[in-house]
Image 1 (cartoon, helix red, strand yellow):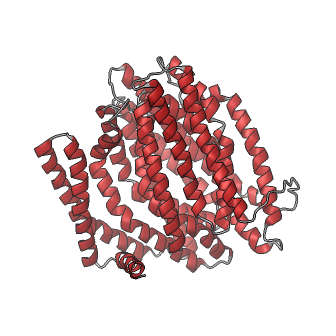
Image 2 (tube, rainbow, N blue to C red):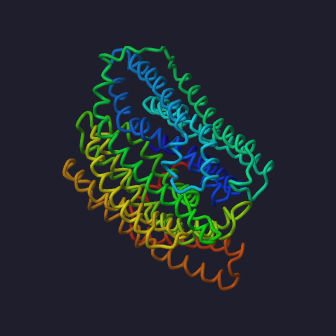
Image 3 (cartoon, rainbow, N blue to C red):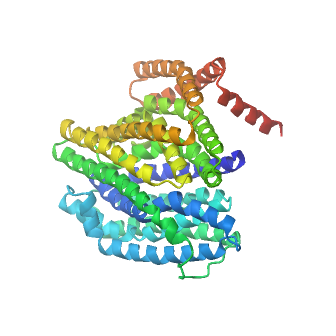
Length: 536
């Protein structure tokens, strides 16, 4: 598990770093105001549609189904995989064509308050970007098939190529169009470059994954004889997964509409700062970096194992896997989340304040990031709990819990939109999103504890408590470092670089010291692993 996780972590880190550069280039090219929102809304919709109709099935239904069939079928699940692949290709083609035809309706659905010109630009881009639906869905299916073969590298390395293509596209846009473009001044040829370049990245990602699957020995032989394959029985359990996914996408619909509306209102009110879905998305990209590198790597490897344990009703192994993954993830995520919250503004200005993104735009991204960072651990715990439910073949409970999540998020987000000034509303929307995971993990934890005979709760809570105690001196030191730099150098480049670097170095040393003093077992295990690797 650790070897596979290290391969995934390395690939995920490179993918996230290149994704990080991609965001920087796009921010410089498009900014975080109206043009940025037009592009990001059009680019978000393909992923929303895929998640709504295909993506959620991969984790909750397809992977456990394939693991089961590979164990039970005499041919190792070959016929089942060919049927599934054929059905997915046909379905994805139909969905993609329908979405492209409905591009104007989709943009209106997610951006009802766009200006007229902004809406036209977003629809134009969507006609290119919605073609990604086919390749996103195909990539997800192939990644699931690779995971059931214990091949975890390609699914995390393939997105690197996608990121590189979009980085090149953003760079070419900067070269051709320059900075400061708005929906009123951007040319159709420049929009075509953005649309085609972005879509090409996803096409190449799917091609790399297809080659990787071919190298495992899979040969696609189209089959439409789905009767008796067992797929229908598996998909019937996806009814609740569809409810869960619909709730998730309803939450995203609320976020996108409120953020887009807030940004238009902010610009109209004279606030020259990006405060919409682009600022939210860029903050979310930074927020997800530690989760994706640490937690996702462990969770992806753990899911097939938990599915096998659950199929054999080895609940003690399921419980142990959950506890171990959570505690190992928290060892890094707790101090990282606190550091991100403390230095969010400095990092965001350092990263984004260039080209079409002003310092004020970047500072607003930092404020959103600070709020999100405080929810990093609840977000991770909730995602891990969902994987336990999925491994048990239960999609009903996550669906019902998601209703509560969306309710909390929707109420808080709408309240923030009404109460806060338009240029600050997106901060409240982000806060509501993070708080929804606190309510979700509370409900999920109670249910899982009853089903599994406990969640190793005393050990988990004890570890989390000690981790936060160990991080407290680091936070105090980090605040002192930030105060020193701001007093001496003000809001300058020296502060934006020096304060996070010095604060994190000092904070890391203090955290390691106090973690050892508090005898946090996970730290000792991690250090022993590192020492054993170095000796080799």
